[in-house]
Amino acid sequence: EAIKSATSITQTLSGELANAQRNLLAIAAAGGNSNAGNPLVSQLSNGPLTHLHEMPEAHLDPTKELARMIAEKKYEEAFTSALHRSDVSIVSWLCSQVNLQGILSMKPCPLNQGVLLALFQQLACDINKETSRKLVWMTDVAVAIIPSDPTIAMHVVPIFRQVSQIVDHLQSMSTTSASETASIRVLKFVINSVLNCK
Image (cartoon, rainbow, N blue to C red; front, side):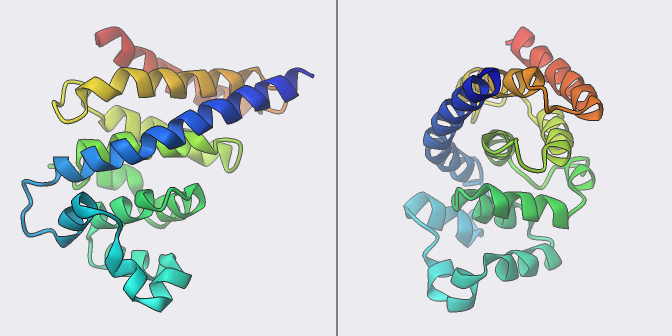
């Protein structure tokens, strides 16, 4: 009964996160507008990623196009494209194909703050799959988020609170392993640090 209840609440919260995702992606695109030469940014601002739908192989298997972007070190394009699909399995695949911690430690970080916040949010949407990996990725991303950044400042607290609730429910489930519990503690520390400084 407790697991059913936690699952139900997690699904409700995940639905709320998914609804907020579209707004956040618009912010991510706006945050990258300083890069006028980036065609992906203008396409995101003007609507769906039409160029992906023009290529049948990319439409059928988005990982091919994403792999090409990674090979060309177009990390922000790749993550924005994956996030725009609102398919957590694609986002997880992309995270597994790159050294996410390495990308996040680059100066300057190749991912803008809107993309980072959207990534943090979307990984939480389906945290019951690949839980251990997602907890590590989410912690790395959360550390890279700058809450005071004007492009995301008003969205940081509500998103971090929603993710915190999802993580709390995950922690309360009997199926959570000891290593996952340890990762949750680290993630919660980062989340609480952000919420306390706002």
